[in-house]
Length: 174
Image 1 (cartoon, rainbow, N blue to C red):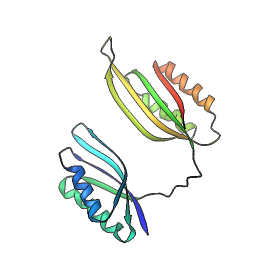
Image 2: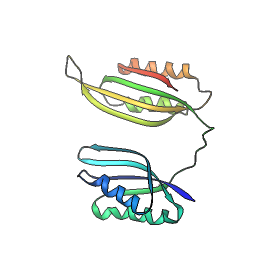
Image 3: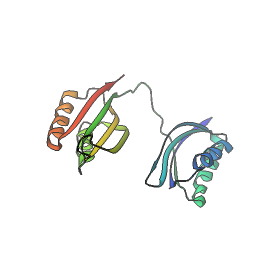
Image 4: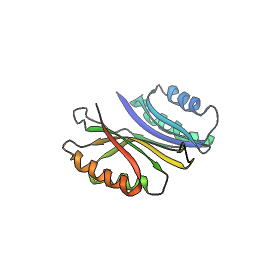
């Protein structure tokens, strides 16, 4: 029998962090399944899902947490079981506009009112081509429950786009 673990980590960015984590997983006969890792502002952080023999699950959790002595903060959780037959509707949401406070707050509020889950979110700033002003860019993979009123969601997003002078695009994912 095997156990799926999900763990997050953050620490000062330096060469060898991924190797140290992967060596720890491998030493406990774990299999690295999925991950999202990124460097931001001198920190390196990530979320990783591994599959490990159940007999090694506790030892791997303890070994990962022990990486704290090397400057990594680690949190380990058992993964939740999901059922493939409960597939929500998926959409890609993209946002571009002049940077200003509140963009993520307003959009996330609209999503929450429709019981929509954010699966992935990537944001960054770029320079506007002509003016050089800061542009806020976001792309998100979202999951909506079956039966969601997509037109009502689009209407809410249009109102937000107009109020904040940003562009919001919502496309179904197949």
